[in-house]
Length: 97
Image (cartoon, rainbow, N blue to C red; front, side, top):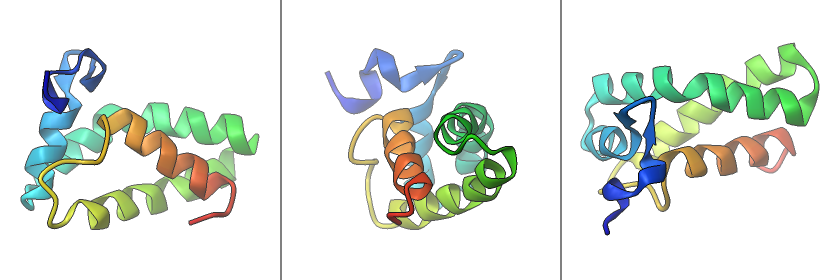
């Protein structure tokens, strides 16, 4: 089983990891689709961690900017996409960017 075949790689029928593989090649549309599919969940994680809607919203943008920058030159993220984004979100929420 490869990373993109993982059942955890799908959210609402969307193959998140396949989107990230495409985004890693510079496909902006794939990253936008990934953002649209995952940002509500990432926001919920941030809201749980920070307990403040404004803080969660302001952190959200930085998390996706970091993800986009870290994807460059990779063939795929280091773990399933949603898991990877949760790790980045936890780090940002705790101030450890």
